[in-house]
Length: 247
Image 1: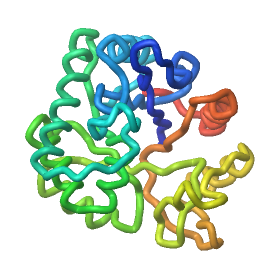
Image 2: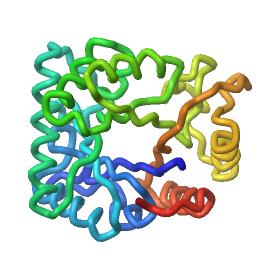
Image 3: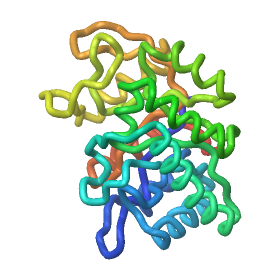
């Protein structure tokens, strides 16, 4: 069963980001910002409470300490620094979750940290170490790619289970990685095209690359975006299309 996940709780103070209240009822997994790239304590608390209302599993969404850049800029950090700030963010969300009668079930790095994790093994290992040291029952969500076997081995060595993520509205390279957002066609806006892609993924465990190549991808979860009405419409359509029961 492929579960839908979405990045939520990314408002900060009076600045509002996303359509959390509209999106939450249609997803299975909520990746909740932890205060470094976005969010604040009250936003985190409200987002956890909203997830509880709709029986949505929550995950920590840690990023680089970069509020100004929304965590979309890479930072040069030592592995021990990365492990420390990931633990810090998981701990913050876990405390709020406990107060709300919820628990954090997984970790999905945000933005540049997610991309850097997939590009640099030492960053991947630093994040794994943070999870293993804090609570190795937490799963780590990563981009499903041609590196799956390698990453499974690294995670297994530290006792951490992985969740493999596929993006419904992003084009893929022939090597099974995301096409850069800077390239035309990287983002897919047609709901019909997205549905066709998910149908193939569901039936054959594969997606078609930007050049027409069929690439096998393990998919535990599907990332959806709901930060505008058009994106929300796609979330609703995918929920109905997959016909899943939330867990």
